[in-house]
Image (tube, rainbow, N blue to C red; front, side):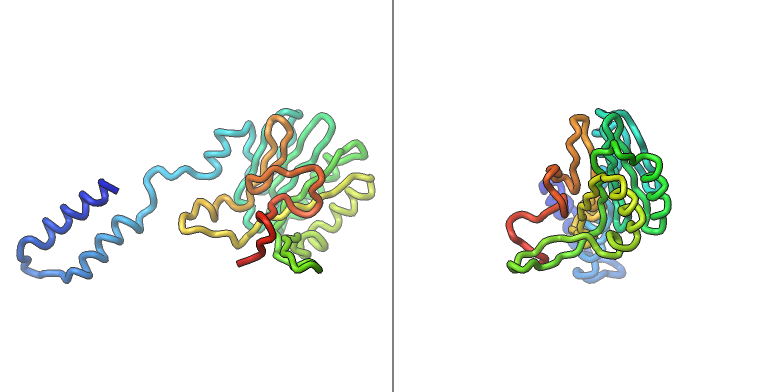
Length: 220
């Protein structure tokens, strides 16, 4: 704030204290100043992938998956309409992140990594707000994902007696600082086996979403 105040003082001293041959109006000068000071990107912004890369052993990028021994921390971010997933096996963990046109690749991962020994399969998909019979809002998976794109994978998982759980993230979340927009659709598993979506720990009892709003708040 002090630095900005000093810049403003110098700006007014140099721009308005002496006459100019081709003077520019005060409003125009202020617009030029605001454009250069406030519209430019922040210096050295910390990207979400870089932050996750520092905190986790493996960062899974789009259209990729990774299988590692239990105790390996993994994360993915910026799902933004993509499908993320975590396959919980007794000795290994698999994290994946595929765009919506690559559902067939997800099915291949399921075929290779899921067996009747698998504990659970988690999917991270875009959600939409729905009102339950009590009038409370709850985020549910978009049906185009749970009922269509992933139908074959879900059927295969359940045919082996393995539990399949959907967790939602909010595609519409935005902020004045684009950090919040870029961080939506983030999921990870830490070294202790704690799975989280959108920074919120997922309990094994969760069955609908791992990114629930606080209280009974619905969409704004």
